[in-house]
Image (cartoon, rainbow, N blue to C red):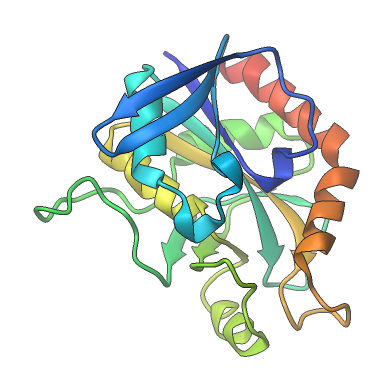
Length: 224
């Protein structure tokens, strides 16, 4: 079994294990992966914002590399006051308010919509102090959600991001077990008095880089 790790904003400032770059050609385009004891893929390749990521190529590249389990790191905003910035959430379900890419766009298929409960449960034991369970909701990006949108989203979900639902859907279609580690880098727009900016999200990611490195190391040690 081969473990794949998808990294994003929360891994930008973290020291990663030594891995070899490899370009993978897929039916959906090319994607760069990093190979070693695990296979790692950085979703924002060449600085792409969330709405321009080629999710189908990314997940296909992992599948071609033999990955059968995927752990995705995602920066997220809290939709609930009780989920404080700086915490880590391992969601067990997801939804999206935008179109989700699919490799089954020629026919109707049935893919389990929830994240892998077993893999998520194992992650919760590895990531000490994490919050297990909850719903991740994906918005399109690249703009941050409005206050009105946040109020609506908070009625159906716990955290909000721009990537994980697309990756979870495609992983399921390609037969890969999938779960996510979501770092809560901020309260969603309107839940705090501070004006939310991307620079604030980056600063939180930078300040938590050592914890993120420890989480990655633990996942590779126990799941790789």
